[in-house]
Image (cartoon, rainbow, N blue to C red; front, side, top):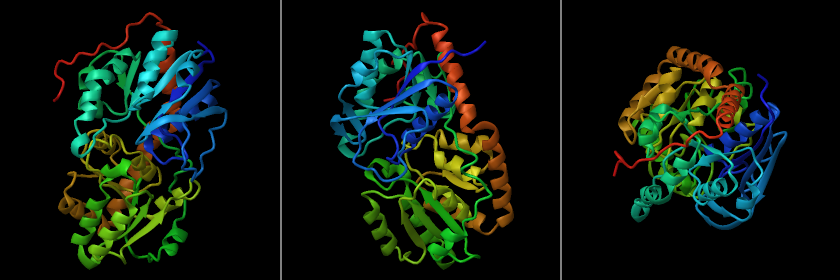
Length: 401
């Protein structure tokens, strides 16, 4: 049966050119749906960071609304509520404080159904740590309850999340993130990147890709530096791709650990150049330390590039590594175990190639963006084919304190 053209709204707190996993996923979701013939609009906040390739996907209308107020990466967007009136369906990328409440209100006021991709739990530090669970009790659970479909990026993460009690509900499901298997490819040559940073042809190179801002404190870059320090003078070189307000802190740690000659900071890298940084690496490490890392798109990019990965044994992240067979896991915050994994791969080029080939085959089959787009389209159609279907019921029974 032919699928009718839909008018779709994606609502996301971040969007390129801001470097963040959720926004990048929204970008690719929108692009694939537009390629399938749907009218796609993205609603996000205007951002002062214009660095990078932030053009809208072809065929997608991006509305960068002015924030009334912004708390971290969460903007309260002027005009979002009335803008959602005339859509067949709204797709909310969650968490999005302020935006989530607006989508719930618009759905109730205008009768527009919405689905949610639940990207990650929010975990804050210090005195702010209790706020996410308080928000979930008071507001978040109502937002989740109103969704016609609740999609986790992995079942593993969903079963252990704030919304764990929903994971067995029939309107929940799994919608993984994806990767452009043509843009990220084993055929790229990373020699120029290695030369630029003074990494020799025979020297093992570890790549880290992630934000160095406070919103991405959980990336665990400091754990990686400590692991490299433990390996002594024979440790691999490290190339750090990313930037942010914590960069000076990381540079100070590198200096204090006497790793200045080992660690190279590239800063932000343009979209066109990023695949060549993966090509330059011998392995990619994602040493995240909290559930703020729920999936790890960089793992897919690395594996699509034919590179082995080492990642923290965290819900969601571990599911990606296990499903693909493209890498190894290490306990989070354990720099000793991480150092052993790095040293083992650095000393075994045959295993690195085997893991790289396995990862590449896996992402070709299960994580290419066009396949994800078709799965989204089918999900939307299932929602609209059952207009009177009941939304997910949220009970606080079993909720983890």
